[in-house]
Image (cartoon, rainbow, N blue to C red; front, top):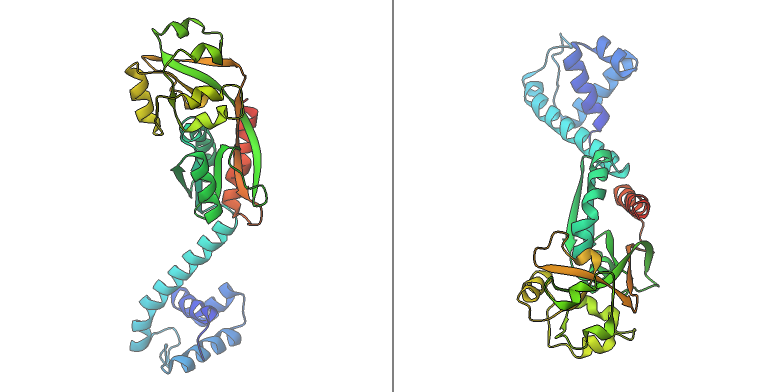
Amino acid sequence: MSFKIQQLKHFILVVESGGFRAAAELANRSQAALSTSIKELERILGQSLFEAGNKSTLTPYGEICLPRIKQFINVYNTLEYDLKATAAGKKGKVRIASVPSVAAKLIPSVLGEFYEKYPNVEVSLIDDNAAGVEARLLSGEVDLALGNCSYIDEQKIAFTPLISDPIGVVCLKDNPLAAQNKGIEWQALLDQPFIRNGTCVLLDPTPARPLSEKAICSVENITSLFSVLELGIGVTTLPKLAFPTHSTHLTWIPLINPLIERQIGIFRLIDKIMYPQALAFHDLCIQYLTNSK
């Protein structure tokens, strides 16, 4: 037969309170019930914990057991607290995948709010492209994902739209196109060398598709893309969130014909029950980002 946690707690209580009577009062048990609990523990262990003539004095075996049982009870209490806190959303970990532009410009503000409410919950944030974000969610690698709705398995993923992110043209500030700062039509780009990037799939179902088809090169990495653009090799299109706010050499101009927007939102798996802390982050994103429009 194995001993019970409660028996170990009674043993510690007798030692710390100095006797069975005081321990029984603290445990809200009768002295007889507490004594029976200790005797049963001693029977299971096969050794006496307290001296026969003085029930508040530990035997040599009891002295050996005391620090080990205290250590075990401390570990048990910590585990109990952690499990309950995790279940209540006060501790644990939230794993999130996000497209880089959202991770850089939107999530930090949500994180600040989240950490105020859940300071002991760890947030793990992974950058990826739109397709990669969905793949990580479907594989179970992350609890939540943020990105655009171009890539969605609607049978498995629930998508909540948060903001609309307009597409614009990115070029050097000294490019003649930059003078059209109120908006530019896609035909004006036909004479410009065009650089394709991952977000250019948004052009495909629109009249601006020829821009992507005539691209002189394709650059997927956003940092490399800006380096190429700053060399003046060509122009590209990008969502506004993906454009750096304080660019020294480049400018972003709204694309007004056609008017293209990507819907940025938060994804979760339909058939998966989220932990409370993940659900809290999910709801905070909806609350914070929809109100920031």
